[in-house]
Image: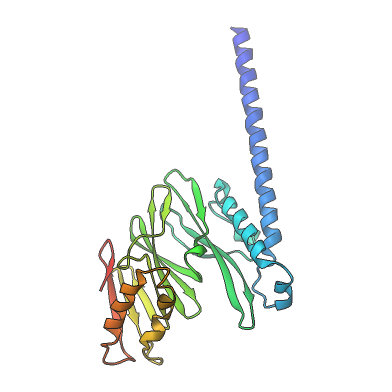
Length: 268
């Protein structure tokens, strides 16, 4: 009996040592990753120092930083990221529901106009608290400034890239992020230029209106979708829908279109 107790104590001690060693290695990995990220983040401070930006290979730097952030945001300790630890990293939008969705971004200004090249990473968690991340800027350009819930697993994102507004619906299925949900006819998104766009979460309605001081120009407002219609053929039907509506507006300075979310799609 005494021998069994000694064996049990020894076994528990070995397990404890292994766990402490594993935790120590995980902490060391996390600290090392944070240091590497902050070393690269210092270059993404939105300054317009063209000579400085041109002196380094920003594409390679952005790719390395993105890869490290994607890894960092899956650590359970990063469920509530302390932005004070990461200068130049921004939290653009978030939710307080069970998915705890977060949109983190970094960027830099380049060129004479100071255009901002931005990288955005989405972080979310499953019902067990496991964290996931994805570089969503490969699908959605600009700054994601708003996220609205449509139904338990669907969300409407609003991103702004200069004068272009990108409305994008994302879906979650289990642990997976779905980026091709056909919320607008057959497309997950629409892009509109120089339009006043608001979403009412209570009525689940999008209001797309012309600015009174600017007026309506059908070609301009659909320019972004026209440009990408070859890579996204579903834009063609959406363009036709908008053209048919806006070309029949009697007052170009007071013209608006409402799109209602039915629970599955946005319809006119």
